[in-house]
Image (cartoon, rainbow, N blue to C red; front, side, top):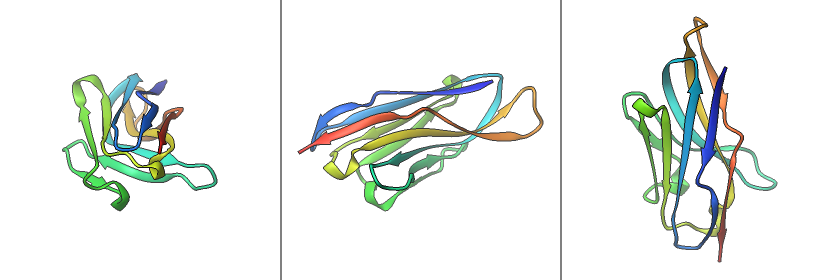
Length: 121
């Protein structure tokens, strides 16, 4: 019914940048919060950044000053600009959205399939 598709992952050297995109599609009425999470090998999935429908943002302390989350409501898309990347940023990055569908009365928490971000030293 609703699908999130991430793109933009890849391999980059330390100090470089990556820009991740996540597009939502389906029978969408509105999207409240959108965010990015990541999971490194042997670790739990953790919050990286979130952005509300009103544009308020919140970041994990480890990425403050380096990552920027933004959204394009007309395209149902959220972005994560990652600058000055470090080896510790290597992980699978997952898109998340709280979506209200046209066919159901309540919102649902939806996840993308993940995209790899690898930082080499």
